Image (cartoon, rainbow, N blue to C red; front, side, top):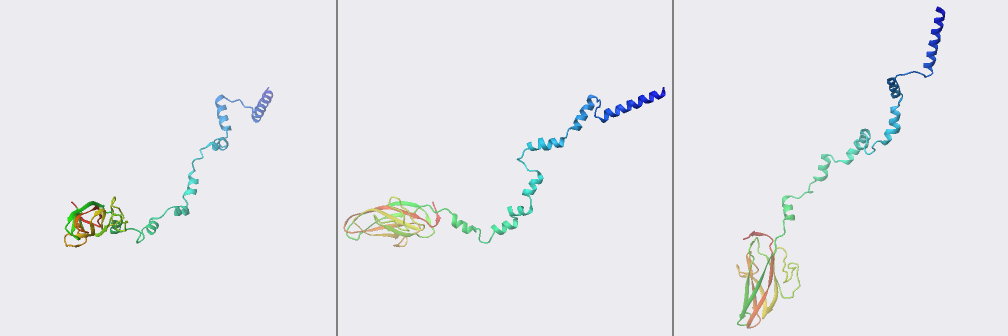
Length: 230
């Protein structure tokens, strides 16, 4: 009897070993899920399925450091403070205040006016005149220029009677029309000499003969500097 039981146990053990060794194994549902998860090769799925779909707009830290943070490239792309100072703060590369003011101060405004010397001469060389007042006090008396009617513009007086203009430091008198006029002069009323003062000037015209004498026109002054203004 005991020998029969022994034989049965040997047969059952052999059968179980064959079934397990052959891959036939009865599992519970929970055991089946664990076995399925263990059998999934996630590394292979990432490499073959997911990684190719990853966003390629960004570098990894390693690639970014390699591409943009090397010592040589950093030194080539940026100046150190010393490099910048050496390159851009050289002597003579900047203006002093006086140089900047002289270069960029606004141009003095043009002052314009008109005149009319009208009178009756008793004889030839009688004079008639009119006063020119600048309305400001200049730092120095301007140079004087008289352009007869129809005269071409000059370097000191680049304008016309219709659009009077003057170079800096110049007074330009543009004649429009004249009758019985001979010599034209610009006088400094303060000294009685030819020229202008820092306040204004007088236009004097001598008559060709006795009779009515008329000269009129426009003038322009561009001060080199103004000491005071009203």
